[in-house]
Image (cartoon, rainbow, N blue to C red; front, top):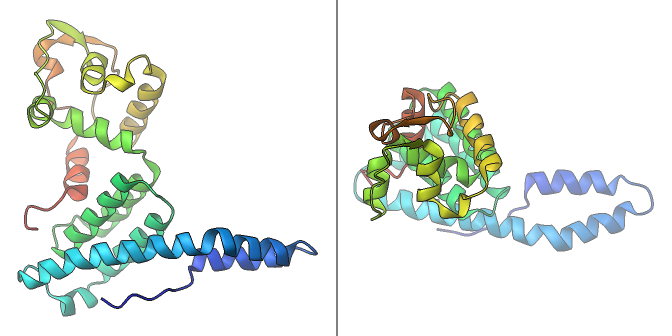
Length: 226
């Protein structure tokens, strides 16, 4: 893959804006160029290289066709939106999610276009903790098995007990994870009210995600066809 160092559009627009400031504008513009330009270019180059390698593997396996992708407007839109989002973050977990999204779009394992845009916006606005908590409560029993952890055996407890057992670093941070839980609820991704309500042992291990939440998780997960 040919690597090119291209000027980032967002960076260029910001630089032009700074350049219009009287007196200090030119100096500020050059300072921004010195501090920001190379890291932004490096982020985009790394992103394009990594996603290109994954797509090339799929093409070699016969799973996708590059000519078809070039004529797939949904895939092109996803490339543009994810690339802009990736440049704005250094979180490896989120970048991996955006990669998974593009791979799923390339494989045509995708929902309709409006839903894709909503899902991409959610990835960008959510923290990594939003995704971790949603995955946990999509299937708690499976989460504990996959992570080689003992399945909780509470007689009665709140979902917060399951969460803090899965992620001990969240103990004593109820305000933090309650805020995340409410965000997930407003997005229509789960169907439970409170993490603190006392429920039975069977209820603690029940799936809490909505159908919309399941489609979201499937969309951001690594494809089985890869």
